[in-house]
Length: 111
Image 1 (cartoon, rainbow, N blue to C red):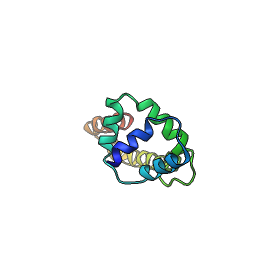
Image 2: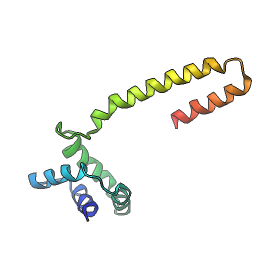
Image 3: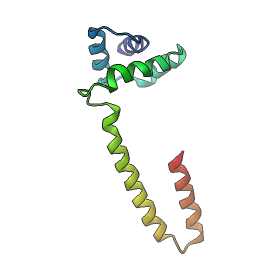
């Protein structure tokens, strides 16, 4: 039920203040996101939904789950992965079969 209400709110580009608050509350809840994304894709309103999320949710500093707050975490993970990759590369430097594994890991990190 909450998932359908969220889809309805995301499909609207103009929201009242009450609807904006409801949207932010629903975005912070544990929902079946597969159902939400499925409805957005099936009804072909994914672009409108993204614009609504950017306009009313991501630009709000009070949201604890906003995208901007995840950027430093993702950078830290990427740096950590790079250090791990470099360490493993040094270990396998002398083995010819190890290079193939490392190349696979490197390619997988970009996909």
